[in-house]
Length: 166
Image (cartoon, rainbow, N blue to C red; front, side, top):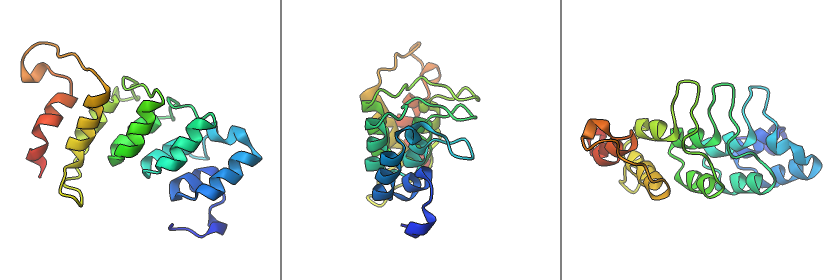
């Protein structure tokens, strides 16, 4: 963890830094904290999603966190997980009913965000974009609108052309 126990003084920081014990303490003291945004307007679930904290995200969801809650930009925890390529959290959010068609204020869905993630190969030499898109294709059935490449949803070209970003 990057911060000491004394510095983890909010539920959002406990989620961001992966301090599960501190998170549990906060939730036991005030169960409503799982839905309360921090001073910047972001929920604990968004911080867990951004930092690929699967245990914390699952705990929050099992204690009443709203899987589709949106911040002031319209983004949900699913958007945040996709930005970072946090595949295990994406899987957990989808299992808890996250809405893949939820749009942020720019009109971006999860598919748009996932298609834009260009982090290149991971440590095991797999492309995060390809993995993120493949994960979504396993959970979501996107109908193709037309038969041409340009008429596909954003996830389809990203899943096929990930190698261009290597």
